Amino acid sequence: MVGGTEMDNANKEWLEIPSEIRNKLIHNVWCSTCSDVAKITNYVIRTHELGIMLDGKCDTCGDAVSRVIEK
Ligand SMILES: [Zn+2]
Image (cartoon, rainbow, N blue to C red):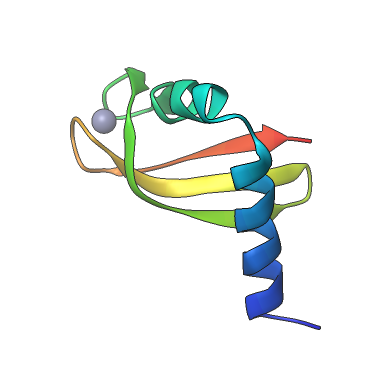
C-alpha cells in the first residue's frame, strides 16, 4: 500500500490528537518571515519520519510554514 494510504494514515493520526491540543498546535507554528509564532492555514497533514507534519501557510504573512508533531 502506497501513496494515498499514507496520507490517510497521517490524517487519522492527526485526528486522534484531542481537538484542544490540535487547536494549540495550529496556533503555535513558527514563521521565519514573521519571526514569531503564527497560526497555520490551508494546511495538509503529511507523514514525517518523526510522526506527522502540518504543511501550510502563515495566517499573518501567507508564507509557507510547517510544523512537525512527534509521535
Ligand atoms: Zn508569517
